[in-house]
Amino acid sequence: MGLCVTGGAAMTCTFGMAPSVLNVLPTAKTMSAMPLATIADTVPFVNITPFGMCQSLANPTVAAATAAAMGVLTPMPCTPVPAGPWAPGVPQVLVGGKPAVNDQCKLTCAYGGMIQFTNSGCPTVQL
Image 1 (cartoon, rainbow, N blue to C red):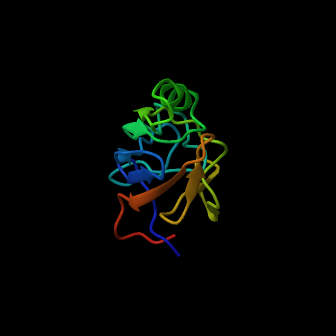
Image 2 (cartoon, rainbow, N blue to C red):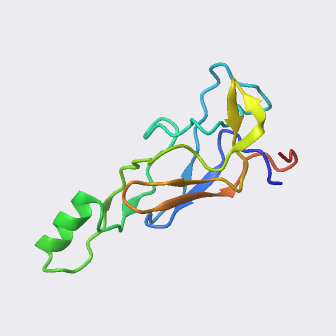
């Protein structure tokens, strides 16, 4: 069992150079002090904010900048591109009709990064 995830939860990406925060909109959500997250909270720049600079060569801007620098890895600004929902989710707990997210869930970026939580934002409620 993991801890429930709310808006304001801290995240990192394996290819990002800075932490980020999960934004959860309160639309049709169960509320605590902050809205609870669901597996569908994956919209870039709305739910998933950038992780500073990206170091993934699968990111076209990083690949182009690295090629221009004669093969020296050149990080470029992060543009999160989630490749699906948070997984595995907590199907036993529905929030607005969708499975909830706990701090063990991960999200894959299309550029190869793995996004995970470093702080759930809800230190006392286990799912």
